[in-house]
Image 1: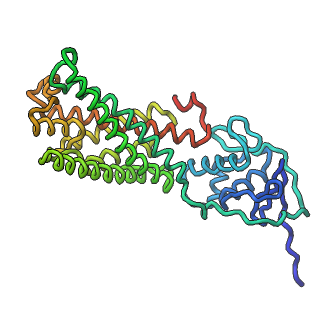
Image 2: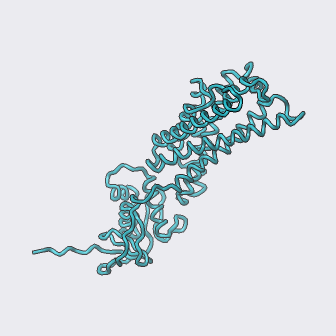
Image 3: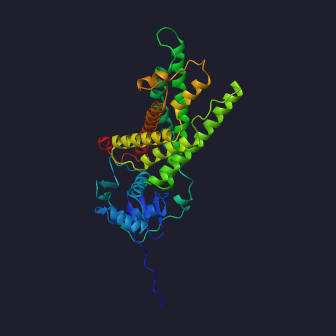
Length: 369
């Protein structure tokens, strides 16, 4: 005797019909695109409508022992809200219970006999293309942050490295403007490489400090190598000589790795994350200087020495640190400061962009605490 198969219960809420057996969610008869895991999470929430579903239960029943971070669950809920037209600020379907879990708050009706209308099957998220828009937003934020961080660096070297005071003439002002523009452009290039590297790692392995550091290092290495190659070729082409060993791939990799590590270790507080990035970048800068590498200050000093008639001299910066000329201490201090500012601006901008993508999961007060 053949035992008839019991039909799976279906659930109707608002304009939606959820069919766990057929693995589909429909809105007004049209399939809604959801990945398998996200559909599983919605089924758990809808079946327990009106009750608290803890984070631990969702992780156990949806990911079934696969080790993931809380960020994966946050992304899942964020996607469900977006597909349902819901919001965290004024939820109609999924309510957040802070520090505990989530609750499905819309009225749910169980439907035993109704069939889900036939229609095209949704494309699962696994078959979709990589989230380029989100990755470009994060990478662009890192680029903009680094460009802004280039402003104080350019002002510092412009004010401290001009070979004459600003008041008597326009020569020093020109040096100042050129250096500010140069540091902004270099910052944009470096921030783009490091930011995109970190962003790619973020989507490949969310909240993984190791992957974020690797992505930042890869981006920094590529941009550093390109900037050095183009810079040396340009000097050789225009002036017939090279300024020497300016900043390049190794410095970019170490600095990008430090920024990526700080981003991967980010916490709830933006201030603390930026402070962590500042410290990580400063440490990387000191390691670069101790290993004989150079960032902006060291590269400018090489240029000034290679072209004695230039209007740029960094001896006054060295004098402020008790040195004759731009020596070892000056290079150590300025390299650490440059690296700290770069890392802080890049990571700060990317964290702000990341939270905008999160769709307001955290309140502004909590984000700044």
